[in-house]
Image (cartoon, rainbow, N blue to C red; front, top):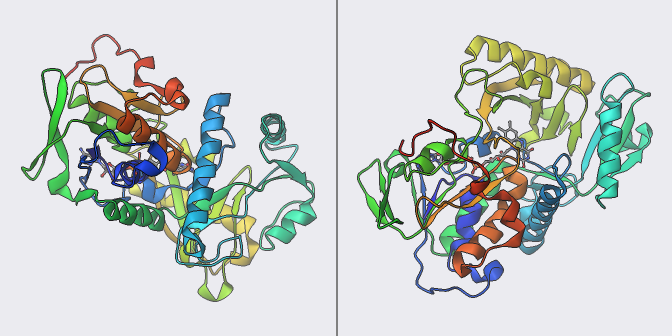
Amino acid sequence: MVIGAGVIGTALAVQLGSGGQRGGGPRADGDVQVWLLDGGEPGAGTTASSMAWINAHSKTPRHYHELAVSGMRAHAALVRATGPAAYADGGGGGARGPGWYRPGGALRWASAEAGLDELRRTVARLRDWGYAAEWIPVTRARELEPALRIEDAAQVAYFPDEAAVDPRPFVAHLLAAARARGVHVRTGEAARVVAIDTAGGRVRGVRCAGGETVPADVAVCCAGWRTPAVAALAGAYVPLVPGDAPGSEAPTLLAHLRPDEAAGPPLTRMVLSPRLHARPLAGGRVYLEALDLNDEVDQHTPAARVTALGRELHARARAMLPGLAGTARLAGARVCTRPLPPDDNSIVGPHAEAEGLYTVVTHSGMTLSLRLGELVARELLTGRDAPELAPYRPARFVRPEGVPRTP
Ligand SMILES: Cc1cc2nc3c(=O)[nH]c(=O)nc-3n(C[C@H](O)[C@H](O)[C@H](O)COP(=O)(O)OP(=O)(O)OC[C@H]3O[C@@H](n4cnc5c(N)ncnc54)[C@H](O)[C@@H]3O)c2cc1C
């Protein structure tokens, strides 16, 4: 039983389905029934709003970096297995298809006034760890992305193995694969899990808002930023940064730009400047995010303020992509909540409160989804711990005094 059909739950369901042997060794029980329940629409939670940059750029410590690198490799392997249909239109890699994957790497630049020391440290650390990261001349960056305005004095780093995915078609692909492997999928308000039944110290099933009870030996909480509330249904403690608390750092601001259709796609790959992160999306749209503006929002920010901050993103985009000026329209600025563990590293593993209760929640979930799906499915299907997941167990967090066991 997987609770939550964002990118994390859906990628796991694929691996648990009847084809689970692919990455998980022999199944203990050939008759396992897998359910995937979502109280909304699959992929419509945080996943839908993700920048979805596939990278291991800022992941520390080293074991978390390696997990992210294996996540990047898992994406590349899925793309190879899928063929040209995996590529999104307008992708930087030349191949075009109806899919989700945009190769072409990432460009990041900085100047002596803004961010250069930090970029130098990042490139040095990544090269030391064997990650593809190179300094390139500004002229080369302009060849790669002709629409970009990059100051002559900028120092540009290129990360050729990085990529981006388009979240909606990616989750649609995973969901179709899960269904093809016999996973039972239930979505919509009636499928929202409102109780996890336990007896004799172990999970027995879940109850849904629509009244249905689904028996289960295992319940995997993949409910994104709502995971603490879902795990608490069985008395377990998952300490994400509270998404809905005033001033919380989990919510972030993003906007989409819809350029003039005649202008063609203004970007083909991820670009990161000190003031703006941008990437191409389907239909020639551009995704925008600025780290400093994230501090200005939480889930309670008034709509008028979100719109004003969206205009600021728009202005920064026009400065970075001058060809857009005047023709690009803001296609919606919004606040979206990240599932944010307090130490930034994933939370993955069983809970002592009930046998069969398991959590998978993480930031960087677009990068990590496929790899976590493989590792978690292998653990659940074989009963053997994956050493790669040892640093991420929920037990590293101690329930503070005064936090009750029941919701
Ligand atoms: C602005 C932004 C930018 C990001 N950029 C990147 C990036 O560049 N690279 C990267 O790798 N990651 C990035 N992330 C992080 C990444 O998007 C998330 O880690 C990932 O989407 C989380 O997926 P999820 O499946 O855990 O959560 P979600 O997508 O939120 O899915 C959880 C699902 O659980 C369901 N659910 C909740 N409660 C219940 C219940 N009681 N019963 C049934 N269903 C329930 C919800 O309906 C939802 O569909 C970004 C996130 C944000 C917000």
